[in-house]
Image (cartoon, rainbow, N blue to C red):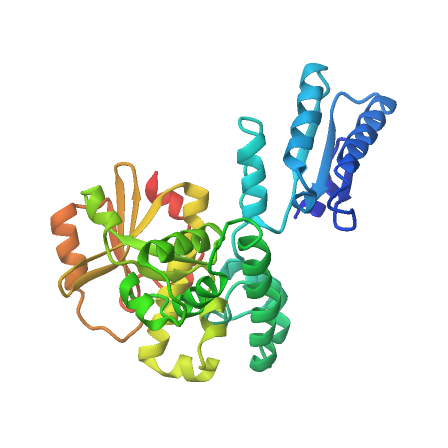
Length: 361
């Protein structure tokens, strides 16, 4: 994306990567910054763009960036800086530790249905099952190879590099087990006590809750809280597990695409997870909270809450005929909008390409 921006950029720029720079060579950042200043002055330009990729691979990178940025500020040097990185948590930690008040985060969520369709020709059903990882699109005709790619090239680096290098995790194997189990239960409510009972490693509910929060910060797996007007009830509720990308669900279960697609009870979970993943991606952009709601046997799959605006969304894929939960929620909470996605409601393809922000305006 940044490469495309630079091709249209009208101001001089320098684009560099820390990929092959030793982690201890933090002085490299100062050298690149000095080069940018020299090129800006030589060109007689009033502004300059410096792009640094994989900056998080350098030790104490945020302190070095802060030093150079503050020097430019004192000397009225107008260098705009773009910091890129493949590790969300490592970037976020560096920003919050040293660069408070000096940055704006531009999140890059998982690819949407529209993007995967336009770039690789994935059908709606293929997207729901294989998810939004562009690198995996070439392998979907060979599901065994596709599954290995997701596990080896997506999941393993995300947990081993992004999570374990950033957070103090006392039981890495417990976190990995939580992730694996959580993905297979995507779209279902499961108490942390029950999760603990299914894991091999010894731990406690507080540890699991912390690990689930970390996985959510990594945009891998989260536990949605139950919607309630009482904050204490939200925090003490049974979490509804949800993957940020349905590829994570598909890679962890022993079910192929055709079996999932032709088994209504299975396909309903994939459809609900795809809708939830899309809502999670939109939540980053529009800064809303996502919940589920249940009262005894009545439930609503997703509740979008943004200030005074509330949206109730029920997902149907032909496996449920009643919808009393949505009606009951509307009568109790009077949401701004309430609707069904899927069977007898907004078509899935339309929902997965709509702009949730328009409903919150």
